[in-house]
Length: 82
Image 1 (spheres, rainbow, N blue to C red):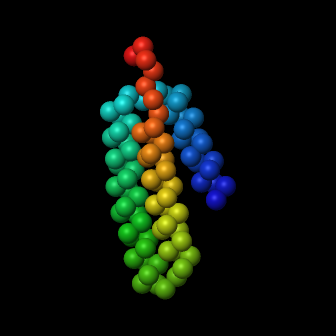
Image 2: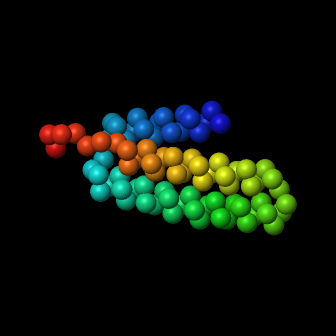
């Protein structure tokens, strides 16, 4: 779980440094939501078919991390002067 927090923090710092345009952030967030859904379904199906709770937990963590990063991207405010 520490890795998830570090990944989110690094993504937030990276986005603040690069100062993406709002449309770019929205586009990246939409793609992350799609990736989280497809990855979560794929990992969930694989975990269910192999009867492995570890893979199911991985699917849940994958979905949560991707959704959190996409919401962080959308929560970054644009600067007033630009």
